[in-house]
Image (cartoon, rainbow, N blue to C red; front, side, top):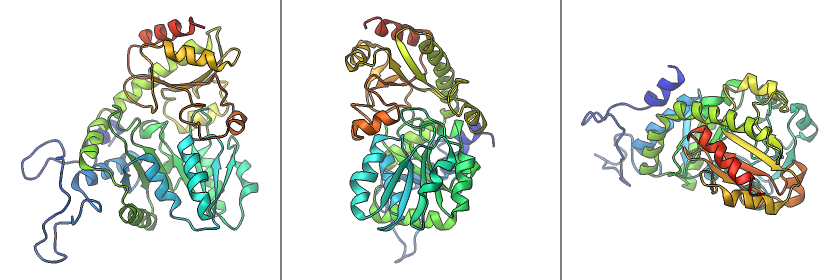
Length: 381
């Protein structure tokens, strides 16, 4: 099936008891057994739930994988990945990444003896000097949050394979519509389902997709043993959201292109970070591994003043100032004080995350209205 067909049909079927076309919300904690150990595949809803099963199968299909595993948040999914490792193990991560991931790595798992190296990954070979006998995994975001850096998945997969390492990719910013890391050799794909997959700012959820049966077995054990599982209502909402994922991503990408071009030509804007520009670093790699360039954009202001960034964001009407991204409505955020506040200032600024940087999640509204909103807000500084 092509992507749009998979989004609507993969993993789901009419309810066998009623013919309901939508997957039912199995709002139950437990399941009756005919005899101890004899049941219909479900015992307890932390372990399995039919609504969650349908979503997991759908997500696996969208990422061209075999196994989908859902969690109660994106960080719950990342937490499960790091629990594959032991004290003394080392992980190499991109140095530009979601602040919550950085916080989980440094404030939680470093306490348990896992060591993290944060490395620029514009060139995949840059990670090689950090690989030693303790290294177990490479952690990648592409595009990165919030600097929109592009990491070559095929090249990074070769490095990982050559050194017998796992490659995990946070695919949240691209979504499965734009990019499928497993196709380029990744072992684990992670999503904050909260974002584009849910798409309507009404669910918090995370997911992992893998091909390897043994890896899936380990991760589903952690999912059940540690218990960070989503409820059936949320799974239902995500299944509903995914049915329009291809339509939404087309519009997000179309609007993203329009807004990025507008910002690039604005006299009060210093830099615009969007991988669709031909002069964007690794643009050619983006063209090879992405089907489009999405609706995530970051930009900085001339003069780099924090007060100017605040004034712009306070003046928006359509771009709502809020955490998160990927909903149908446009959002703006200030990474330095919001999503990436847990990263020390000196570390943020090494990757270009300065005080005036504003991150946009361009929604599916009319692009002209969004341009006018930007024009009015920028006129206030």
